Length: 398
Ligand SMILES: *Cc1c(COP(=O)(O)O)cnc(C)c1O
Image (tube, rainbow, N blue to C red; front, side, top):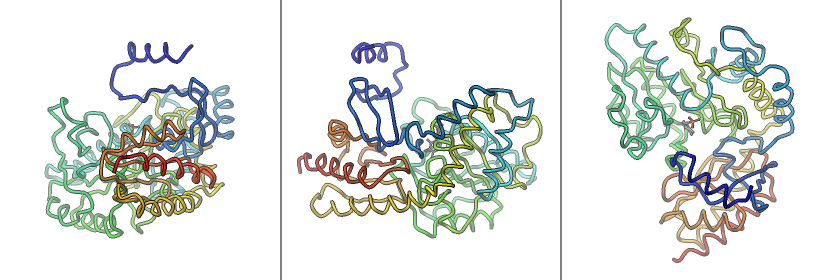
């Protein structure tokens, strides 16, 4: 199939919900991908912060082949070994005691929101269901999660939104304190805002939220869908902060590209979900669960969190060094291999120039280039990416 025909069919048959770049990716290996014309790219999008182990990691591919030939789907009317083993593995490597498995980030957050409502209903006698989220957050595209998302552009046209959601500025403990009251069931935040611009809060922010929640009886939900799985230099971003949430949601990198979501909770909170409370047809299927086990095990055995921290420092340092000679760069920030380069102007031309020179990058809002390469990224990839970015920034008119 030639590229032009593919593009035409894409325009004709797919719902027009994405502003896609004019290229069609057909193959990947490690940090590299190839388009339908055979052009090679360095993939610093990581499939939208998904491919922690890179494209087609041999262990992931091997597990996919083996599990596909063994058992793909059972339904939750039966036990299956990979789902059980995955839940145990997640519990052993986090604060959590119990896990609900689903198929995407939005679904993991949806389960968290339902769990909070049920927990609050059973714990407090008064009506207590408010969720306080933050402005500029991103929590997904279902009706409840788009309501939780603090960005109007994602909500526009879908009103009426869900009742029971409030938004306060991110990284602002005073605003949160003023907003929490006896109706607050939970606070929902990302440890670092991803889509919202790679916004890293002050060190005291998560501990401060923990304290406010403890004082008021509200639960703390951390959305680690983007920050989890080693991305920020720790397996979970909350581990940098010294506190633990009551609920955490994970998805994106969990099965290195096979759709999956997970809602993790403490025993006390998870107890609100009883038989029949919640469900999903594909959730916990042996196929996705087996791939998640392979991904998480590889991540732990190969110490990829530490690698993310080291490579992130290298990349951040090189980008910082561009600032003096490129006044268009307002700020470089991030943690581990989740990095934002904020410009004084829209980044679209930089993204295009990078792509033309063989580097795929993400954006996070209008003015931020977001980098999220696979955690297996090597020095040479970082060198090349920075060289391309430097050239792309240099092409901008001052
Ligand atoms: C991507 C993302 C989601 C939504 O995940 P989907 O799998 O697209 O539904 C939710 N929260 C955060 C922080 C994300 O980055």
